[in-house]
Length: 374
Picture (cartoon, rainbow, N blue to C red):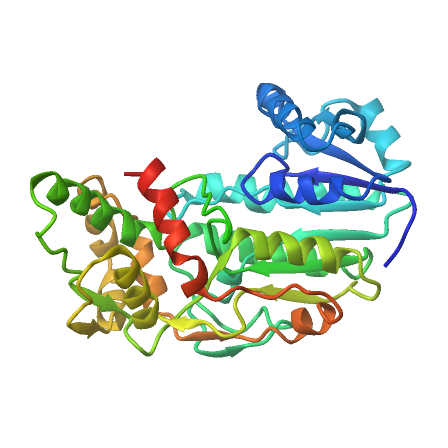
């Protein structure tokens, strides 16, 4: 592991993954962190630092807020400050992205593609750059069927939402930039809450499936605790894998791998190397929540095919205010992709980092969601 002073710049440092990464980096006393934050979000960053001070009194000395905006070609608001930082920044962690399955193409292009290009331009000017740590997503595999190896990207896959497509386009740009810049790419799976505390910042991913039944359970319990809750079907069944990963595992991997030598030019899949099937995932949560397991598995491939017909997806999207679930969620119960994690396993050797089993933290996710989302 490299030692000594470490100067890093982070985009998206106040986000769900970002603020946990900041906390990890604070454990290294010689690390100085520059957070790129929009001026309108300064108060959010300041509150984060105040909270961190309870555990890390040195946080105000280690964390520096800089005014910037990924929509700006210069990245930072001040050209002088940008030049000063480019003289000393050694690493860039690019976590900022607009993640929302129903995001418009225009918004996704601005945040995920243009923002990444602006970050890369800043990185090109860094005189002491050791590595750009780019956080992508396993969603760049789209609907690819089969084993998705970590070095794959252009494989003829299709995309059913603008988020995944624009993250794919952004990774294309990052890989091209890797010809002149030291770059490591990290692809988390579907990130859920913390495996210890259950903490999650919003309803997303599998929570769209679980929270409605938790709300129904809360309603029925107010009438009678004897009323059973039936989970109707298991979308995807035994054939489709559920690629969820707790946020603490993602952050532990980012922190550990980023400090290893020889990561430049490599891509790391940050997900469970032994994922459950959708059926197993639903059964575990039904057991933990006290729901009746589904009677049948439901293949969703035909539904995905129908959603790709002209006008059908738009019709389904018009019903989202009623379903409270983005229609794009359906596609992820039909993708038969299996993700290789060879690089991740290789670079985690010698650490005690491993992806916890879903069964060990499912109850914690439910308890947190009941408290804050129901």
